[in-house]
Length: 285
Image (cartoon, rainbow, N blue to C red; front, side, top):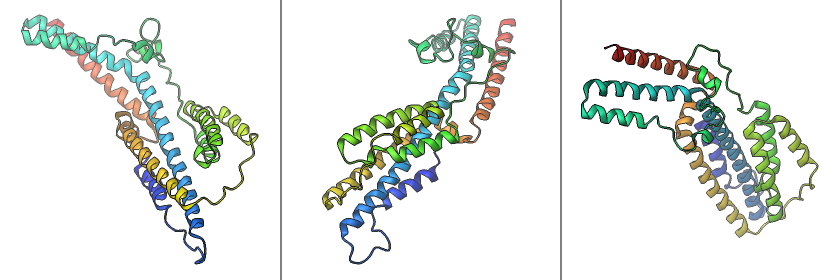
C-alpha cells in the first residue's frame, strides 16, 4: 500500500465529517451529519480494503521469501559455523573457540521449525525444490498466490456490499462479520471462483435493509468518533506492515516482487560461493 494511497484514504475519512457542500440553508443539521457519517463509513471501507490488500501481499511475499531463500540463508549460517570452527581448530584461541560455538548455535534447529516452514520442508528436513536452490538442478518456481486484479476487484465489491460497518442492527452486523471473515480467507488464498460463489451467496441472501432512519445527533457524533478511532487503528496497522522487513522489501519492487526474489537469490548464491571458497582455503592451509 503506497503512502499516497494511505494519505488520500485517511484524508477522505477525516474530512468526511465536514458539512456537505451545496446543502440547502434550511436543511436539518441531522441530515448533513448523517451524510457525513455515511461518507466516513465508505472512506473507512476503502481504507480497510487497502490495508487488507497490502497485508495479504506482505504475508504471501513472506511465504515465498522463506520458500525460495530460506535454504540459502541456512547454508550461509552453516558455512559461517564451519569457517569459525576451522579457524578455532587451527588457532586454539579461546576467543576463536567462543566465536565458533556462537556461530554453531545459530544453525541449531529451532523447536517446531518443521511446522513453521512445512510448505518447503520435507520428511528429510528440506524439500527437493529447496535443496535444488543450492545445486545445479532446475527449481520449480514457488506457487504464486498473490491476488490477481480480478480477485482484488471481486474482493473490493464484496467488502463494499457486505461490510459490517454498513449495518447498525447487531444481528445484521454479526451476519456480516461472519461473511466477511470467509471473504477475507478466500481473498488471502487468491481463490477467484470461491469469491464469485460468495458474491452469488450474498446476492441470494436476505434483502438489503431499508434506508436507515435519521439518527439522533448524539448517536451520529458517537458513530463519527468510532470511525475516527478505527481509522487511527488501521493507520497504525498499515504503518507496521510498511515498516516491517518484508513490507520494506515488497515496496522496493511492488510490480515485480518475483524479480526481486530472484535478484536476492543471485546475491545469496554469490555469498555461498565466496564462503565455500573461504572454507576450502582454510581446509587446504
